[in-house]
Image 1: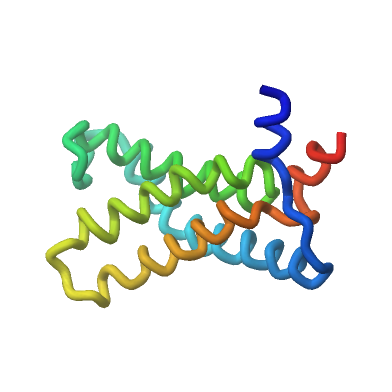
Image 2: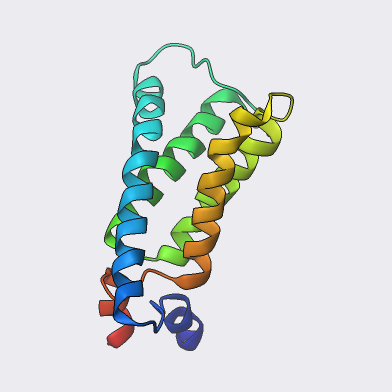
Length: 141
């Protein structure tokens, strides 16, 4: 089990410039995603009935809460590089739902942004956080 966790937190072994690019990519994509998550967070905390899509049939409040968890908490984890591969999983799921369920009947222009986020999150899932991350600190121990 310890080996599994250590491999999961492996920040990757790349040339120096790649680590800088991974840091920039993690921070940039997370800050951009936080702008989407903050509006959902405000909607969640506003009180009253929640008006939000329910693409999975689990109820609007649960759907909104999962989107907020993904877009805010997981984005924060990506910024600091903590559990990067795990943090990308909810983000990948959220972008799949956005692109292929929520916007399935919309023109491609509406699907394009979630697909772009999806490509970035899948890339980070494969590469890991890079050495400028909390994952690196934990991995070295």
